[in-house]
Amino acid sequence: MSIERVVVALSGFMILLSLALAYLVSPYWLAFAAIIGLNLSQSAFTGFCPIAYVLKAVGMRPGSASSTNAR
Image (tube, rainbow, N blue to C red; front, side):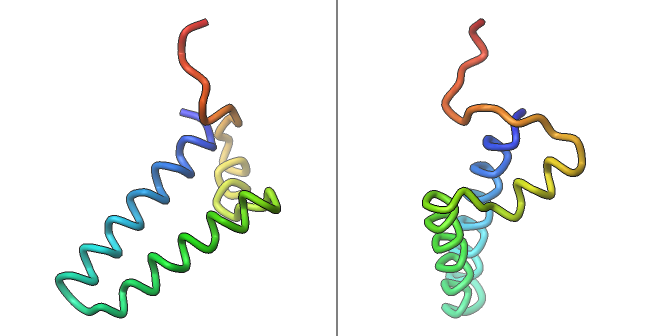
């Protein structure tokens, strides 16, 4: 799995988690979903994604989020 796919999967999971916590615990958890959305938006324009740097440092390979495994 490439860095880009892990970032997309982790972002989706964290947004779903924050929505569940907002429903079950407190609506203030929606702020967490907003922060994730803002981070995704800024990384689209700037190319800076903190988790991508962490994943690269631990040895994951970069790749294209839209690529297929057909080669």
